[in-house]
Image (cartoon, rainbow, N blue to C red; front, side, top):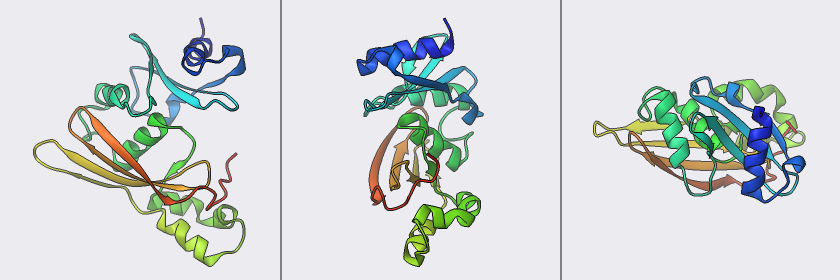
Amino acid sequence: MEFDAIIKLAAGKLLGISPDDLLAGNITDGFSWVNSGRIGWVRAANSGSVVLLLDDRGVQRLNAPDDHSALAALLVRDAGYLPTRLSPTELAEAIRRLGVDPRGFVGSPQFWEQQKAYVRLWCGGDDADLAAKFKAGCAAPELTSDQGGTWQLKFLYFNANGGVEQWLVNGDRERFNAIKTVKFPDRTFVFPYG
């Protein structure tokens, strides 16, 4: 059975939908550190989406609500003990894009540099106050850790609904928990990428 068919079948069971009504894609290439399997994103028109890992253990859901254990295990297995081998931005991308939904962008100075020519699109026109909010959403992710192996990551994330999420992630070498709050509500910006 092909990759898309396997993950559509698994997602259909999770979402209670026929696999024929689902769209699936391989998003592994967006995560250069992944080497033990393939990651698929499966979505339905009105029933949400799932992010699944297919590896030699079978199919595992990475974006299970309030359960980051499968994602943490993948990170440790393929990137090493947390958070050592990933940059703050790479860790933020993994936590948000694999743990929730792949659409969107981690705010960072690099993201600002990539998008500053398109701020008018994000803001729906010329709006200096909204442009300033957009730039504020591009603060660098902050990662701190101590000698005992505990760490904390703070980052901002531009979601596909035009909002900016504020994330606080606390963890140790093998697990983490994440809290998301709203920095700017959905529809603050116009998400210009479909």
